[in-house]
Length: 68
Image 1 (cartoon, rainbow, N blue to C red):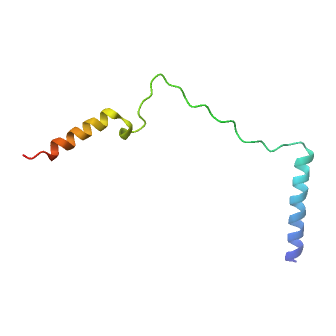
Image 2 (image 1 turned 90 degrees about the horizontal axis):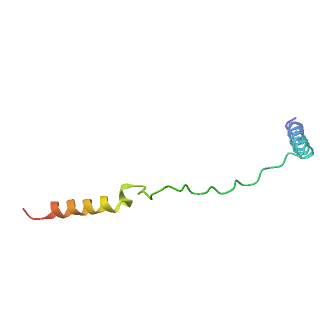
Image 3 (image 1 turned 180 degrees about the vertical axis):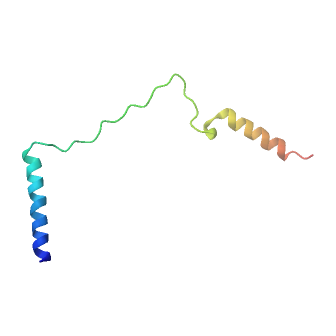
């Protein structure tokens, strides 16, 4: 009995694949590459990308490390 169900399921899959191929439905290819967004100015994406933030952080570390 399980073998019969397996054969029937396989036949259904084959028929569905053939029907979609006969209907002319094509599998779509990969999407075209997206162009990066162009903005007027390049902004830092994160605080560690921001030179001003890094300068301020270094200044704070130097200030905290100085002997009192």
